[in-house]
Amino acid sequence: MKLFIPGPVEVRESLLKEMSKPMIGHRSVEFSDLYTNVVDKIKKIMQTSNKIFISTSSSTGLMESAIRNCTNGNILNITNGAFGERWHEITKKNGKNCEKLEFEWGTPVEPSILSKELDEKKYDAVTLVHNESSTALENPIEEISDVIPEDTLFLVDTVSSMGGVDIPVDENNIDVCLFGTQKCMGLPPGLSFCSVSNNAIKKSKNVGNKGYYFSFSTFEKYNKKNQTPTTPNISLMYALNKQLNYILHEEGLKKRWKRHKRMAEMVRDWANENFSVYPKEGHESNTLTAIGDVEEVDVKLLINKLKKEGYLISNGYGKLAGDTFRIGHMADRGPSDLKNLLNKINQILEI
Image (tube, rainbow, N blue to C red):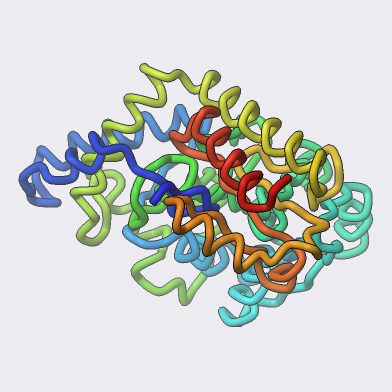
């Protein structure tokens, strides 16, 4: 099955083979060497000098970690899709004082409205989903970063964009930036990463009740030894190291970003010719596309027919389930793969 969903994604055979290497101890010198290599390369992907923590969990675990560690005060959760709503739910369930700044699904965060909210009330932290995969919308992170006060921590989910889009963490003053293996990185699920600024580390030291598994204090203690706090997914670490070498030294990071943009433009051109692109123009994601105006399409039937042809796309997410379908174009997929998929959809829909 050729995957064109928003994740998990297709994994190259050489990476799967890398995961079959013999096991090593997670407290061994060999693992510490592997850890050091991986962390140094992740910093280059993220364009940061901040500390990198590695967790054997989904990225949602690190969303919770950011909330538990960064403040006992007020948190502002920005939402304009399902995963922004998830971060708000996580914040509430961890007993934090929080407010929601809500924008309509499919429309970007407006920095001027955010700035007004931050002027009217003091917040210790702001959360943002950079690439909202429920609506295939990319939020204007540079403009948003510009209006966040220096003493307010900026927590950003780049789960469906890091590795496929240019996101300079340090330039955008992001205090906690998180993502995982199973989307633009082109790997199986199982590991997640976050960069953590010195300000976030400093503030976390005064926060109690952080738990153990996702505590920055625990991560930092073992990070000094070039290790993870608990047993990591070592097999996936092998594949990650190989994939990071490929991204940085074989394909090249800038070429990877350009390939993702080219694929996004291919799908948007096709969608605008036959349907529409769901989010507001100028804020479309470069890693997946939500196709709108599909009322005359039986999306469930389309997905089932594509499965028989060996292709998998995704229906709309949450309240958009009946109004859109989504095509993922991330990780190691190429324009020729995408062209074949779109031709198959054209044949099935007779367009």
